[in-house]
Length: 161
Image (tube, rainbow, N blue to C red):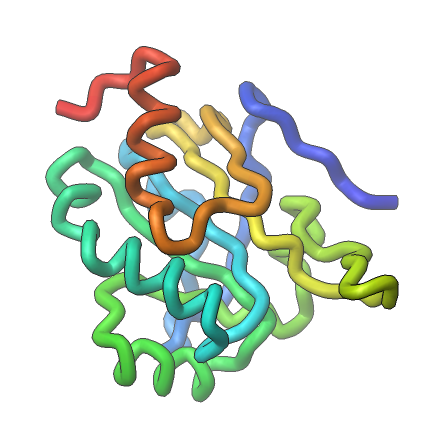
């Protein structure tokens, strides 16, 4: 049964290895806001656009007390290459067993040109400093993701000081 999370829900706890084999968990971000984005595959056009948009605006997010973490089913070695190739400054979690994706409901059926298969449902969760999901983006705009997140947070009355 697929998990469905809603805005206002407590973000599910997670633990996974990043590109360097370090264990990262939701608890590491207590007291910070977190942009947790799930993407299908390293080095693919849409995933690269999304990662580079967040990279290009990384200082903007840091200045507003936001951390950025990407999650995909790729392994640590793939993430290392992706990070090196595009100079990504944030961690990418290697969710090879799909446990984080399953907890967030981002592993599920995809319909590609009439073919149904299991895969990553591109989704971004904005989690506040208390661990509550304040915004969910299903099918985010890969090349304008920072603008999309900023506008949505402003609309919610979240101060982006």
